[in-house]
Image (tube, rainbow, N blue to C red; front, side, top):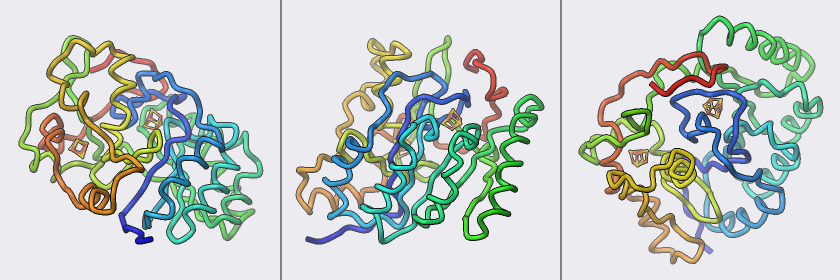
Length: 270
Ligand code: SF4
Ligand code: SF4
């Protein structure tokens, strides 16, 4: 069977998070409900696609992936299914100390560990110093471990506005929004289907949590249909090759850097 290439495929192993970054692409700052995917859940979802897709990078993230107690097995399973490309785990780092076996599993599976820094607020930096100390210690103990700290707060943007405390969409030209979109190569494997981006994949959870059901401005996101595993090769190719889609009209068309309050605080939306 033909395997289709794509830059990246992402699987979210948690929906909740211990931090509250207001630009979160998973909307985890809204403290979304949702059970942690089990290894059996992931196996079932990967099996539908791993013989058809060839992602250059497969990434496990969330929400905060280290909130999933089965994360080590998730990494091993991901490597079994997605063994031709790069494997990556993206975390905010706050729970690394809970998994002393994590570095060895990462080395064995050739999985890169990306730790996102989410701000420069003093209370956050005080906590993040502990994360950095673990990074330095693991680097020393595991020379083969690929581990990186990325400054996620630099240049990040938010995909919606806040009006009267509610997330509300933009009104843009879809091509212009797609051009500046930071999620455009972040294909999501969610509920066994492929979604174009996290903004669309997790919007139904946001709709429930933020009570957006009666807001018609969100209809295009509400009506979005992800690519199912029953898609033909022609349909899959079209899904992967299509650039902007009608839903992009609801996203920003200018990249405006977003400075959020300390991610340690559950603050009012700005
Ligand atoms: S650390 Fe921030 S950006 Fe990452 S999942 Fe948690 S809330 Fe979202
Ligand atoms: S709908 Fe389009 S512009 Fe909006 S996040 Fe998804 S890919 Fe980007």
